[in-house]
Length: 408
Image (cartoon, rainbow, N blue to C red; front, side, top):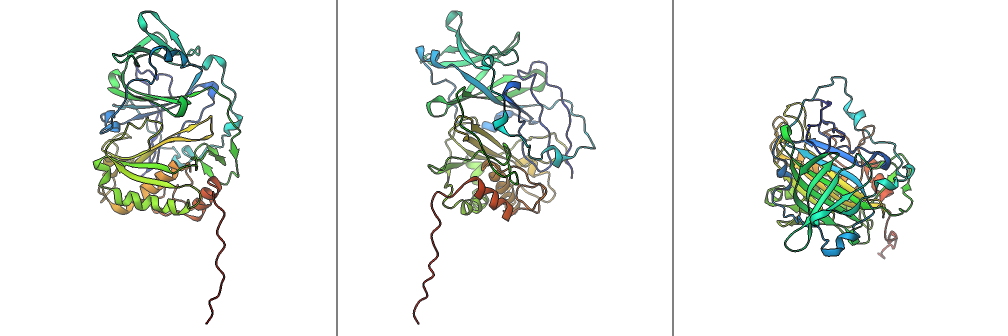
């Protein structure tokens, strides 16, 4: 089976008419579109061939922002960093029989430290409008504007997004802030016309000076570029949740897959894995879920299979990871001959691969690796272990071996 990548037209009323349309990968994962700040936010669009709300099924959102009263005046000097959009209906996709899937999804050689400084006009600020309305906007012409008004509790909600002269009503679903609101995220739903409904997440960070990015050997492929080290903070355990009753059905293979990474991370990064039935949507910046979702990510072609994706956001102010969520797709798994939703061995391999992405490893095609598209490679290789060791240094010195020889 091989993947097919195509070019699609954005729907007329999409608020992301300027967005980059994602490629479809065979047995793969979502590939990030890495773009400089000057070109605007990183945009990823997915056609799910189903109700996008399945992505947040079982979750509980908080539609209001944390700002109330005059606090809204303080929400200034933010940069729109990335957008993830899930659209209900796929528009025309033209197959390209000459597509090289591995080449398309090979790790980039980008160096984030070489990105140009964002222009001042890109910074988002709160602008007061008539009738108690505020507009969160930048002066950059291609970037959307977000209109807010206050609810009965005095907190503000986003109710409309404007792109150019177009005004699109949006149903707010969830708003989240990281510590001190260094980062913010907004998740909303809108009507995308012929493409059905759309679920879209926006991510901002404060426009503040950033520390130097650690660039190591380019032997290792990381999701932000070859050798680009953006790890999770090891000051406290990394909490990862198995979210919802459906996902608990595959709890055993999830735990087995993650345990193999956890052993590699001993004295480097502690993984705290728990189950929960109470969780926010994937856009939340402080909660990291693994979810089993009965939905499509690709077109309904039996030869295109994408069993899972991992959505990740880094905090450019700290140069560490901020958020990551893993989705495993039941319907995609059913495309595989003689496979079931809960096939243990393949689930272990899928989760191992996706958790490698969560740890910020990128695809690896030239070496034996769990990060390849080779379905036979479901074990963590020596190269994977070295990549992890390079990314997460030990927090404690290695204990010397006891060389004492007991008396006979």
